[in-house]
Image (cartoon, rainbow, N blue to C red; front, top):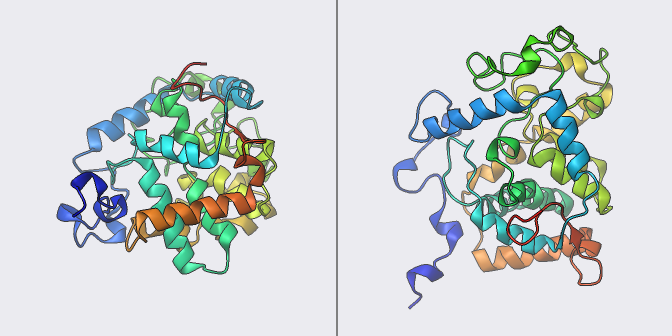
Amino acid sequence: LPSPQDADPSEVYRPEAGAEHGKLQTDYRNYTAGPLLDRVYNTYLLMHTHQTVDFVRKKGAEYGACAQRRMSIMEALDLLDNVVDESDPDVDFPNSYHAYQTAEGIRRAHPDKDWFQLVGLLHDMGKVLALAGEPQWAVVGDTFPVGCRVQESVVFSDSTFHDNPDTKNPLYNTEYGIYQPHCGLANVLMSWGHDEYMYQVMKFNNFALPQEAFYMIRFHSFYPWHTGGDYMHLCSSEDLRMLAWVKDREWEQGGGWGRGQAPWLRVSVWGLALARRHTWNCCTHRKPWRASPVTDMGQH
């Protein structure tokens, strides 16, 4: 008989198990109550205090060259075994499981779009930054534009920005701030985190994926926009065209948050095949993925 440590994690870590049984999809992303609320609030408090225009520009310059370490995609996914997202009010298990869960949910909904399935597998991979010495408030959580007035749909917007120095800068306190009307989200500085980092890694490595995939990775945590309906005044016609992809039900809900996962080993092999098909230069020994900044567990 298999030992407990051999149990399929996809059968163990699922929201509907145990106390979560019967939880409705509308009950997720509850930021007013729950056993993890203190941890979540403190993460956002730090994020909303320290994520400034200067900070975002600094991090973009620091990691934009992707020059610190090379690894395969599957190596990076394995690292996510060690990352639990402290901004998530719903789950308290490693992000690697969520990656496979999301990809499997998309596979079932979109069996003809393998590139979309790969996006589900990759979407949180940038959280390896949390193993490289970056604090979680600079890695996880919902993103928002810096350099303009914070909108109401930003999580905890009424209580967590008081000590952010940008809120005292009149240049950044208007509706448009440093931006022009409908300038396009590609021209907006987003709070720094795993979304922008993974997008930069994908660009650097020339991932063979459609533009929709790059866009979805870059803005999947921008909930104030794609779910809250805010910041439309900054959007271009291209942003509005892409909005439907970001709002895809299986994508937005994380593949149903893990309902009905395939056996772990089979999904892992399938994920590797997907990665090799679309990112061949990131899955060979000759041209592995260069994924700044992770070195041997956190050395820069």
